[in-house]
Image (cartoon, rainbow, N blue to C red; front, side, top):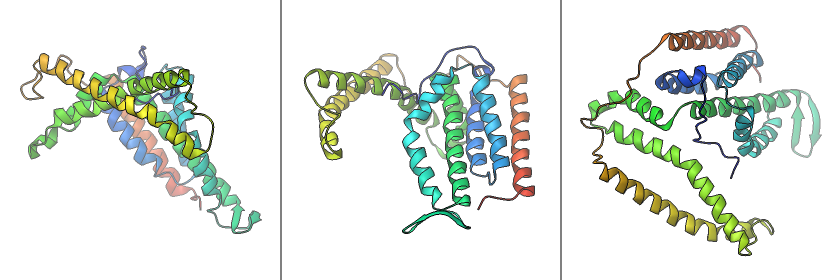
Length: 269
């Protein structure tokens, strides 16, 4: 539980921290699409170079990014193993119905690198952007939806609150598990079904605590006369600066590099 970094903000002074949050959200969406549009190792290398630059410029300790990878390492391993058996060509290893080829090994490495790049870039967004900035950015980006009478402010607020309380709930889960273990509960031995049953005494107080926190938050917002986004002013005005335009230019160069690599270099099969 202590290794989950989703929703955590790491305060420090860096170029990424000072970027416009709207630009960071749009860049993340663009990066996700771009990562799935890489079809060879050269285009993936361009994306990986961007990820390395983002991690370096964020001034966030590397151990924070490694923690974010540690949570999904099992998914990465399973996905890589499955992709080993999807490849054409002469088999290097063959047993029963399983066949490993050189193309399959390339596929496994390729998919693994894709997932790692996505996790690192997504982590950089939450590490360098406060929940308040995320709320403002989401509301500004979804503002055109107000034409269809969609409550953009409330949606952005709910998304940000949910993201904000992920670390809090994980910390609460860790405390409940420690308390249960102190009372003699065994959560680490036995088969899978036994371990799942052992989590029931953890889930019940966790749900109770979650509903209590939600109720307290609702009362606090009502006491402050919160009525949604209608007629609200903003303390912080979002404006694009020179560094934001430089970031846009770099993003366009990366997109162009990926497209050129996909066009002029062979794809992985």
